[in-house]
Amino acid sequence: MSGEPARRLVADLRVPGRVEAAFTAAPGEVLAVIGPNGAGKSTLLHALAGLVDVEGTALLAGTDLLGLPVRERRVGLVFQGQLLFPHLSALDNVAFGLRSRGTPRAAAESVARAWLDRFGVGDLAARRPRELSGGQAQRVAIARALATDPDVLLLDEPFTGLDVSVQMALRIELGRHLRDFAGIALLVTHDAIDALTLADRVLVLDGGRVAQSGAPAEVAAEPRTPHVARLVGLNLVDDGDQLIAFTPDAVVVSLAEPEGSSRLRWRGQVATVAPHGDAVRLLVHATPDLLADVTPAAATELGLAPGREVWLSAKATAVSRYAAR
Ligand SMILES: Nc1ncnc2c1ncn2[C@@H]1O[C@H](COP(=O)(O)OP(=O)(O)OP(=O)(O)O)[C@@H](O)[C@H]1O
Image 1 (cartoon, helix red, strand yellow):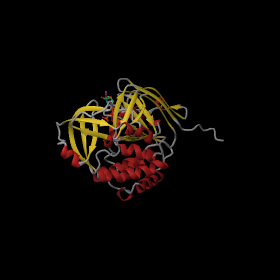
Image 2: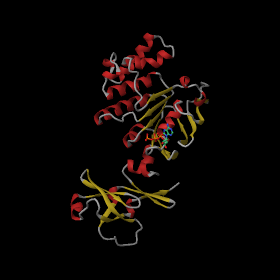
Image 3: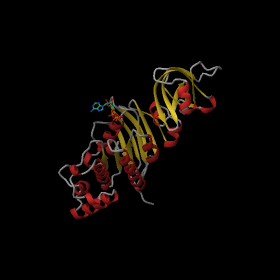
Image 4: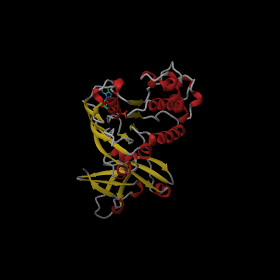
């Protein structure tokens, strides 16, 4: 048996006023970090990368990353707006990390070339960043981060700002490389698809704290924050010590108050009306805001337009209830 401890990350970090989070990640695991604007997602990644002062520990195989000089942390970064070195070719950008660790030029370039090839941009090796499209530059940036074989790969919104078709292609490519990646990946994303398709686990931040963590399917089925509920297209109602989640198509919209004694009814005002597949999706300002899907015929019949006062009710059999904590 090897005496090498598993390269598990055990982090308990605090950047005062911005984020306070304890989490663990196993080698090979992709952890999606999600949450609303200002939740502390970027700060968490910046803390691990050494870009911001942080208290606490981030033990990796027993060594505290936070105690290491930034250059000695085996951390790969792909950050929004973190540009490639403009004066270096794509190849030299990817080879840079290895070169700065003392790898001889030929060996570093050979590794760099292989990474560019894997991301389908090998023929662009000689180009400078300004000669690359956004999607090509992002492929080079991801190749650059992976080329150093980091223990921890930090990806902050790697698809933001790219065309939707480029995002889709890059998501598939990145997914393939993340499956083979032996280290730990933390992926900050605003997109439920990323969290559901790329991640092994999801860490939900809210107001600088961890609100929930678990397998993507668990988090999607039983969201604990309005932000996650909205990401996965569910309504979420706080009912004291329980949370209630239900899909927009489980909501009945009426102009008159629904009969019966169910507490699952709300009065509100239609805020937006938009096509959603074969249905019409309403966002209704109620307490809380709710989504409701109705048929186009019902939308016309009920005169559902922004400003319309409506009643909403949820079928008791169509809701999922779970403990709030
Ligand atoms: N350089 C900074 N100095 C002080 N406070 C900051 C700084 N950067 C961010 N903050 C604050 O720290 C908190 C967390 O911000 P952070 O950027 O980590 O959130 P985020 O979840 O990444 O948000 P977004 O999705 O908008 O990028 C916010 O309250 C933010 O205003």
